[in-house]
Image (cartoon, rainbow, N blue to C red):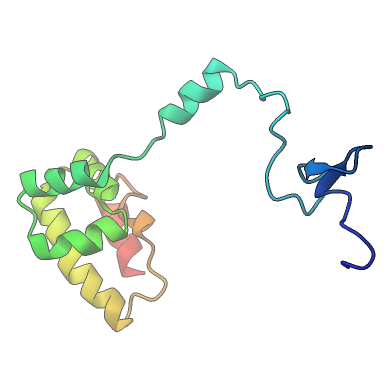
Length: 142
């Protein structure tokens, strides 16, 4: 490559024989976006919609678990699996205490999933699928 010359996309030559670095030309192998391109405007509604779905900071979730008196040895599992929103939904929809739900998910369910016993195809969504308790009981027994 050195015998053929310096590729045109890396250096720009001048008539006096000097050259300067030139940005890489556009193409599929381009590493960085164009710095001289116009910014793409985003509608305020789009930005507001995205800002409503920003996840809660893990430090806030930690404080939540602590405030509910959930055992600390469950925190890692509950936070890594993002189960705190599920605890909130179950508590709000079915009236169970957050400490009870957090302990159940963080201890019992974690052990069952680790042992891969009867729970291989179990999905967390099953906890909140039915609002009627009798339907929910039958759903789990299937």
